[in-house]
Every structure is written in structure tokens, then in C-alpha cells.
Image 1 (cartoon, helix red, strand yellow):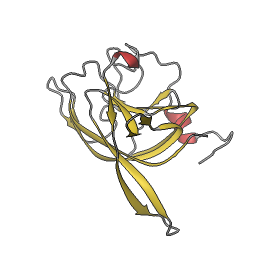
Image 2 (cartoon, helix red, strand yellow):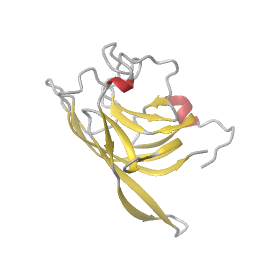
Image 3 (tube, helix red, strand yellow):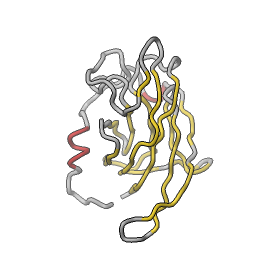
Length: 169
């Protein structure tokens, strides 16, 4: 997955530069989320090891392989499994990664769509409305998944992410 200096077209279209959060991500509760591992057959008949993480919309989810061993990456490729969560307070249940197409100044990541799933990869926040994708940041960092909301304590449900490939280069 080393893309060298070639721009990541998908990521370039999805990153909103110079976004300022209403609070720093470190101010929110962080939990470590451990993967369920399984194998898939690739089109060339090779075997791919794939990790699935079940994330909670109430917190900032740090993806880890095992205790004291976080997933660190500069680039991540993924797809979503089950998405089934609500922002509470009368909001509907969401089944897609970007359920709303408008922003709110109250949300954590200003400029990102309200209630979208947000990835932190390579030291930058990202989002996509697609069911799969890839993001490439500019440095090696831990990987986090959360949602763009203003009140996290009333959120409920699950967001399942499947890492299909990642790179530390």
C-alpha cells in the first residue's frame, strides 16, 4: 500500500483542512477496542488476515491489536460492517456512516457532517459517506474511530469497522 508521493484521491476529496474541534479529542473518554480476527480469500487466492472492531458511539475508540499494542498507521483501508446507532435525544437510529448532509457548530469536528463516523488516521480526522474507503495521513499515529456529535453520553449502539489493509509507511 505504499503510495509514495501519489495523492490519495479519495482521501484528498474527503479531508476538510484546518478543522477545529469544539474540544480536543483527548478531552473525551477513550476506550481500547480489541479486534475479532478472521481470514478472507483474495482474488489471487492468497489469504488475507482481517480485523473487525466493534466501536461504541459514546466514546473515542482506539483500535488496538492487544493490550499495550495499538494499531498504528499512516494509511488505512476499511469497510463498514454493522452500523446501528442513535445520537439519543430523539434522533433516529442510523445505519450508514454519514446519515446527515449538514454541519453544526455544536459538533466536535466543526465542518464535518453532523453524526458522521470520524476516523483519525495519520494524525488527521477523516470521514466518508461510502461503505468502504481509505485514508492516508501524513504521519504514523494510533487509529481512532468515533462519531461527530456534541453530546456523547446519550449515544447508543454499535459501529463495526473492518480494516482490510493498513500501512505504516
